[in-house]
Length: 294
Image 1 (cartoon, helix red, strand yellow):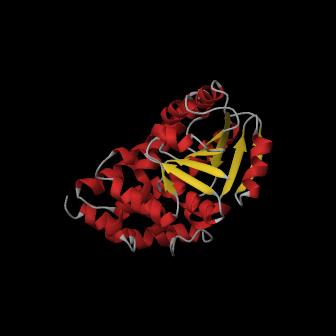
Image 2: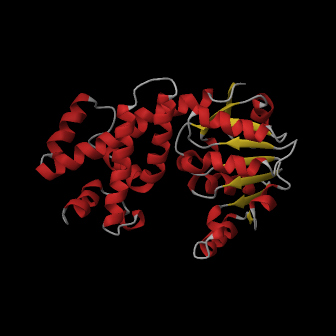
Image 3: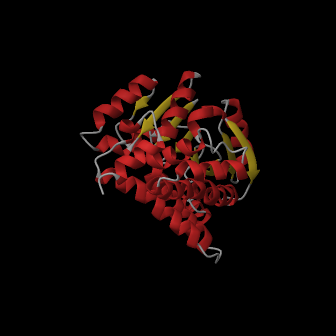
């Protein structure tokens, strides 16, 4: 099957590589291809993955039966609108981006106006551990047919609704809790570390919630997700804020999560620290690098 990925970052890169390995013809397009400095690394990644890097978005979409959009939340609607005029009947645009239901509906309107199908996809767990087995919820007019196709390709999809936006609503509401826990852990342990009481705090958390792993890898994992993906997570949480505002629910906590997720990323940038320099990740060492220079 001819498959195209718009966006060749972490999630898109993993899914594209695995689908190519199953014998599909996979083409990728990423806006980094327009940057002369980023292009060599993008070409190398495509070559290592066995996929074809298209010279333009139009070329990438020409022969595709399925088009997966795996870009950042801030670019999701713009990409759908750009792709819409290049698509035609018989093609399906699968929007895997973490954006508000209203944003997905606007994207669907643009795609459908040119005769292509639109599928709302909610990615319900991080892609790296399970890869193609990552759980996906899908919705849209053609969700039943596309769900069958995805399952044939080895993806762990589940048809949720024929309505665009319901799958994304589940994803966005879930993100409040998941990204919020990451943000709370970052803020909590940043302060505890500065006061020298981090072990006592972790012991107390473990006593209250022994099944979560506060005395093991959980703090490292949660803070590492912010350090590595805080920019993307902040963009997603801005869409969560929109999700809440669209139904008149106060978004104070979600707005604060944006600040904390973005704040750690900005603090690392201010000290010229990249995530790659922080691996293997130890949350205490990372926070020490930030606060020791203040």
